[in-house]
Image 1 (tube, rainbow, N blue to C red):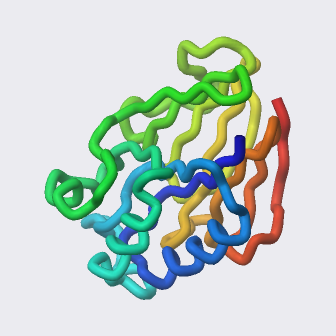
Image 2: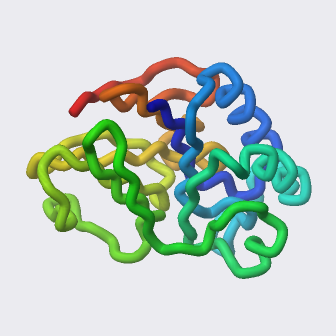
Image 3: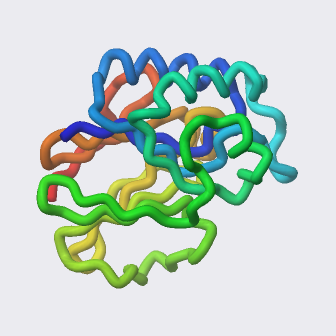
Length: 181
């Protein structure tokens, strides 16, 4: 099973077009979106290429492959234009005999020394901070793909899960960091 994992798109058509190029190159089985899909939010400046109406048809093309959760900037009006469910606070996936807990990360927030009630060998996938990370705590892998549109760590990014390993990648496809189970 192969996943492309992205978060914090914030309505940037240019970032989503770049992500679409990566999706085409990666050929994932599923696309995991960790929230903040269309709106930039009141605390963020408008991202480059802000055009939510252009983002909608790109995302809807992938509707049959998307698993999405709600971010703090997502609203019911977003669900009205998107052809896949995106309003759940959490989702669970089982992949290659491992459990993945998907959450935007704004509810609840986990302190750096906390882990959710997940068994060792599981993974927590979150966005929200716009900072990419890939680390292990108490046997649980924590994955944050960063942001495609408003990165707070200097580079737009996404993540890939491919048959037992996670990789953080820049939006041009360069692998930045990898970790397996």
